[in-house]
Image (cartoon, one colour):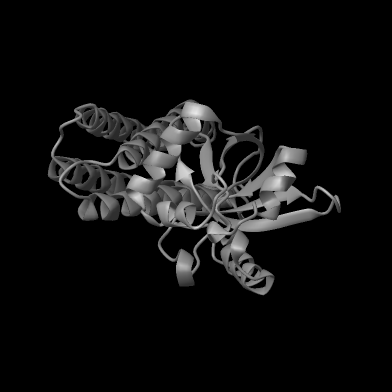
Length: 283
């Protein structure tokens, strides 16, 4: 939870340094949470301004941040910056990409904020401390390429680790939820399902095609990996079907998530074992 816009600059600098050095992983108040670095253009100075922010996943690829500033009476600087220039840069620990910031309004803003407060009452506590309505901002990716990594193999591992990390967060959230499944947890699950589908589709139609052309001996391995993609897709479909039941028992969601993690972890480990050495050799 929380965004660090209300924290001292030296603390922000420490978090930013740790984030960049550890692929998005940090300790302290952000440990085990979802964190990005948002770089905006100073509305007065024109200089880059980077802020660590907690975020909410959203189905469709965009992410959401809340300009809480810890419940301070004024909006944080980064929010004023996006009002002046909505073109921003997002770092999520794996990818760095340009994005467009859109301030949500009306019913859309209220629905997202309600989801956020249901998942973490701290947001409501911040709202209670101030008379201003805490803005919710959507960040939508507008470009960018593969993750920064020393090799293609390292890039693949970083992408896989991002899925592992998000699924671990969802597993923890599902384990600590109440008797009903929260709306944001549903969204988190649906977003990771969408992300897995996109990643495997790209592999099937891109990386695997290139590897097959350069390494014909890989045919049996790639056939197995494609078959495993189909198996994972079946588990994703099952989880999505469960999430479609508004009265689903959270215990059933936990079972489905555990099964997906177990199957996916086997798949990722095999893929890395077979493909990373070849990808590293490609430079």
